[in-house]
Length: 255
Image (cartoon, rainbow, N blue to C red; front, top):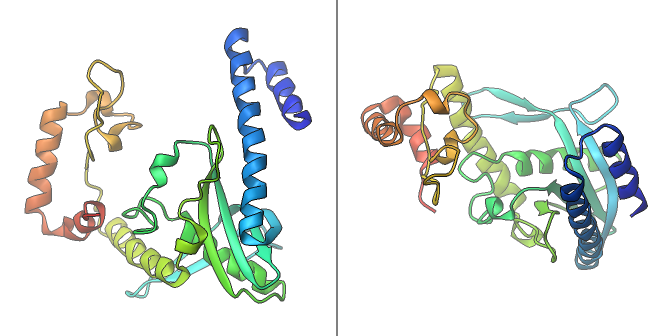
């Protein structure tokens, strides 16, 4: 509560809080989320038997940190990743647990036990797992296993790690990362940037915003083709251009 109050006061001084009545409601909601998160944190540590080891763990950033994550693709291309991991827990028996806090809807992270990259749209967890293993071993510890999970933290009462640590297979996740990164890197090299609108967004009639999930934040959405024509153009393109075949298999695979 004390830490939250300090941040709330800073936001108020910077005039970033909006209408006072709405701000009071938002503060109450955030405090409830923070208290719920404290309970979730105790639950997570109780289940894993691990304790926080690093927060904001940087890799590939600065000279003294963990080196960038290197991913070698089958065609000889080497990709380098850099970033910061929200939290790494470590247990006495050598288990490493990576957590990436998320403030958005937890629904976005469903079914990651089937495809941890969600058709190539979420690459963080396998990259973070590689970085965390490197960091732990660099400090002279033995990493017996590594798991990585998204942790929704706002407006959730119970702990909902996605995927659950027991469902994260490090070797399978890294293999999938190489597979999807290969498709993406090859597409970039060949100039394959298709305008795929994605799935229709339900309940959008009369509501501002794009009717397609992939167009939601596009700066050109309002001047693009009409929704019906946009979908037809993609259907024609995806079925006739062989260069798109690897991307279509990745982006529109079943499951």
